[in-house]
Length: 121
Image (cartoon, rainbow, N blue to C red; front, side, top):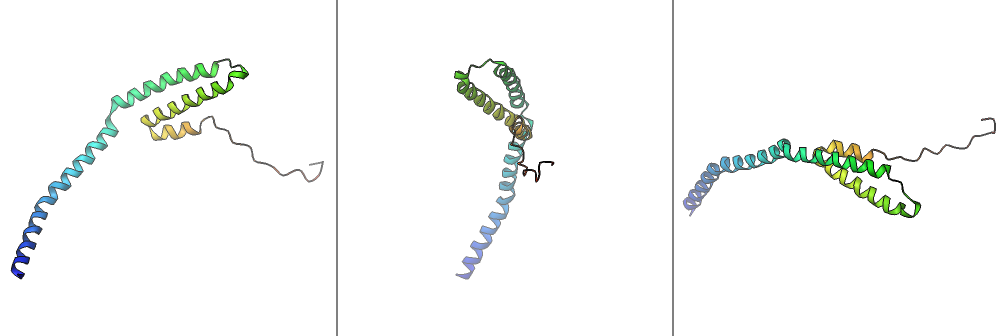
């Protein structure tokens, strides 16, 4: 019984040691292909850049549009949709570009200062 266990153990260990390099190699090749696709897919990147240029022209049109007060909400929705499209396409080009554009044209309120202690201040 012990001999059978030892034989099975040695056989399974040998099979595992023989198969391991091949499976590790296959996994590394798949990861390498995915990384190459992400880094070197110029067509996808160039298409995203071309789309960004088209969105830039659309954004200029949106910015220059004369908006009546009753149509302001529709204009805001159109702008927000345009901005979301820009951020999506920017993410296809570069995550850094996307992060930079997310904060662009965003204004925070100024810090609130305490009132002066006396009128001459």
